[in-house]
Length: 413
Ligand code: HEM
Image (cartoon, rainbow, N blue to C red):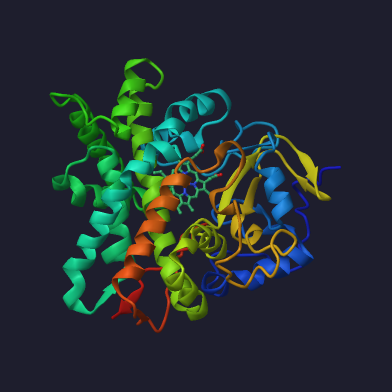
């Protein structure tokens, strides 16, 4: 029987809080404890009335494919709290974001994936390799004389943003604006001050004007770009006007910080595991496996959220319609029932998949591109200098719910 709302499930262990300083610094001991003691756990609610956290790999794999969980909040009504009022500037922003593939379900979702999937398939994105190499080398060349850099802000972010922007045909003259817009859009939430909400609305509108301008340019958008593919889909009536802009934006929004964090986290992990770094330097062929293992070991996306669209019992816990269920991918990746000795970095592990990109119908559309950009960025950085050392004495992990990324990572040579 489903437990009633008046009596929230009693937590046998202190409630898990992904934003507590200990968990931010190192979430893996808490994950391990909860996988053992309370794998479907009622934890700190983030911004809502309460939330479930699921820690075991098998449970997460099953819930990612469970139709009773949705990316969309069920309509209010029986059993669903009405939630906090949403301020007007945020409504406009949310209306736009709701058109993104990541927030769609069922038919609309399948339609958008059918359009976007082929544009991001391994074959479609293979052509970016020379560009990634060129941009990576150029960035490193420009800062060589500094003898140190912030890997996140001086290498990974500019590299990823540039490659993703070029896939949309965005000219170099607009890169800085684009970086600012993405920064504003990805940091805003319903609790942000009104000025920030208005800035996010403005950023979305300005981005829309930019892509519309590119789409309308004489001669059309560059062939083979994601922009050209989305434009063709719009002309065929497969995506609406708003979906066109919202989903081009989705690629930048979902792909930039995550892939930059992947590169940065990987540099940190490799420089902290010199034996494994040596293996990779001696045998560059290991890179493909190394990318999978690094994604498993320090995933940029630690948690994904779903809404329960009906009440049901899962592993003995009553999950009610309207409640939020967080699937802790970072814990799935360290589950010993799925991978042996999970807290050991082993670049020779032959994993064909990790939980880092989720699973089921919302599996990351950009996974091939992320692996490709991330792998090349690491390869070029490691080839460039045989002796990189960590300079950061204190690591600061951004308090971004569900994500794992640093504020900066300084290395020297
Ligand atoms: C290492 C880098 C990346 C990681 C770790 C990552 C992780 C994820 C995860 C876990 C999801 C599933 C979200 C959920 O189930 O709620 C997801 C979805 C998505 N990702 Fe990525 N991602 C990365 C890079 C990218 C890139 C480069 C792009 C595109 C350029 C991208 C585009 C998307 C999109 C559009 C979705 C939504 C798919 C859907 O809902 O059907 N991602 N990503």
